[in-house]
Length: 249
Length: 264
Image 1: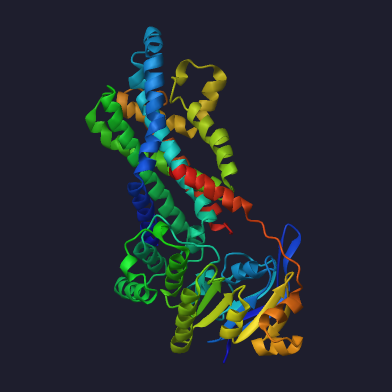
Image 2: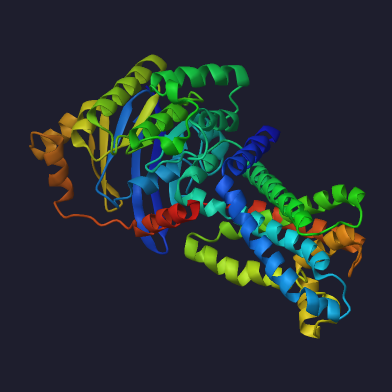
């Protein structure tokens, strides 16, 4: 069981380390958001008396890097299915739950690494975390968020058979999760509908937790944040394992 | 010799369409069995059911005494599979692909390393062990997959069109190896192919499937005698007709393009 998880985990990590274009490519979007929104809306945000927008935005941007990388990684299963490698793992005499866990944690590790790279880059753009010692728990929280969305990606990928389906998932699942999470705006003063949607969006708690640990401001409270992310991560790993076990080629 | 594969009235339907319509056959332990049929006849569906990848709609399968639906792990340990389309990880090296397989099949570390070395030498890929699989030609990938399918010393090896796109040299080499393995280890070989001469030369017994049913079976010579033809190719055409079959594949091509675009 552990050997299977390990070998599937190391596969994801090796693939990540080896594809420099993918690492750089996945940095483009968060950095663009940070520059365009951070500098573009910074003065408006400040005039509204909310302080520095860049400071506010960075945890959200890290959340963005994590959700996109981990969902994308989970959905690699679609490629593995089409290019055959999935079959190799499905005919192996090992528990599919172990394969699924290895992939989930592999994807989560990769997404966390991506989140850390984004964090390092934001330092160049003037971001300063409120406490350096809280960085370690912040990385752990990143891993938790990444596990949640890796598992979600695998769950969705076990139903989707082609890349058209992938676009659908990106536009109707990932984008809403990201935009409604309060990654870009403080949910406190938003209209009621947005606030309700933010409350049911798991990424809201992830981003809010990151904000607590990185800039010391919180909406839900960090304990609630971590609890919610943890519970939903466990639930999604469970659902993902179930769907992956039922997979046929 | 006992039968290592027993199939009884096996059926599979997809959304009400019967792809396999109640086939029965058996394969003797240590024999080489050729499973032939035109495109879309139900060959791959049958192989998927035998190798635990698809659940049959009805009917029974016994692989080395185990039912793939009840005890898939026992079946999976007993078989090695070389699929019709490549199932290697292109982003890993030849060695890493073998290593991953060995770990998944629980081959202990020491044995694993020795066997991987031996098998890579055998398929003449030893000097490319640290190259990425994406740099390999079709024939090299095929050879690597065959080596991988043998790594855990299975009792049966399933080969779905293993020689597709291989040059005659590689093809001969591969059959020579499988023959030796069959003799030395008593490994049962179950294969499909579109090359009739290959089936005639290598199979002890052949079954021909068309429109989801087995329409003829026996040794190559028996099939020729039955149809009063000189070659298995003619016998095959006599049995299955001359109409050309269609098979959908456009979606896969589309994906390949998307992936190439993404990697750039």
